[in-house]
Amino acid sequence: MATSGANDKKTALVVGAGSGIGRETAKVLAGKGLTTLVADINVAATRELAEEESGIVALGDRSWDATDQAACQELLDLAVAEVGRLDVVVSTVGWTAVSKFLDETPEYWRKIVDLNLMSAIYLCAAAGRVMREHGGSIVLTASEAGKVGTSGESVYSATKGGVIALAKSLAREFARYKIRVNVVAPGITATPLLESQGGAQMLDSIVKQVPLRRVGQPEDIAGAIAFLALDEADYITGQTLCVGGGLTMTS
Ligand SMILES: NC(=O)c1ccc[n+]([C@@H]2O[C@H](COP(=O)([O-])OP(=O)(O)OC[C@H]3O[C@@H](n4cnc5c(N)ncnc54)[C@H](O)[C@@H]3O)[C@@H](O)[C@H]2O)c1
Image: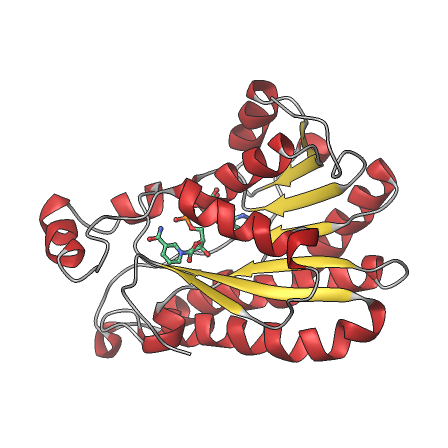
């Protein structure tokens, strides 16, 4: 249920909101009073989210593919047409699978790069074009893998490192437009993506390495994304906030 407050007239777009971290982020932003538009390749999921939660609108009531540059521009243009201006753009689009680098195919590498890095590039370009008149805030989703690397996720780690570098560079370039660009790097987080990667046994062994001794919940990550997205973080740009129970403690 949306509450009234300083964010009442602000608007947000969450891409990748059909599941996991993105879905929770949309709920948190709507709960803070933002009119929250959601998009995902899975239209059934965003439609269901919009039906369940007040303050959330499934933009265009259609499937949006963030690996398609033209679709990303169309998405941002439609968002502005619907709500007048966008204050916050969040992308949680991403996908991974664990496999051995030497067994992988070029097609697999291309898919990982498109989903995790090109989608962020396309969305930042489209967001920058619509936000440069009035400023705003962009939050991207990387991974702790992008800071320290993960065996079995080489190309995924490379793309997430790329997302971090993209945000740092755009934070410098977009500062003149008063657009902040930041990143949240989740650790191990209980979402459908994690469930698809392995069973409880895998989780048990990983949790032993987490200083806070638990797997993250989507709420943990969504809270960090909302913090960086909103005015509380008005003097923060180009930063990556790791939310992983202390699994990594890198600069
Ligand atoms: N869950 C974890 O442990 C974890 C850890 C580190 C980083 N991350 C990152 O967090 C982000 C969110 O992950 P999650 O765990 O919530 O995953 P998830 O699979 O639950 O959600 C990802 C969403 O992205 C959507 N999506 C996929 N391809 C798309 C496309 N081409 N266009 C538009 N939407 C698309 C999916 O439909 C889904 O709704 C990802 O970038 C992921 O790499 C997750």
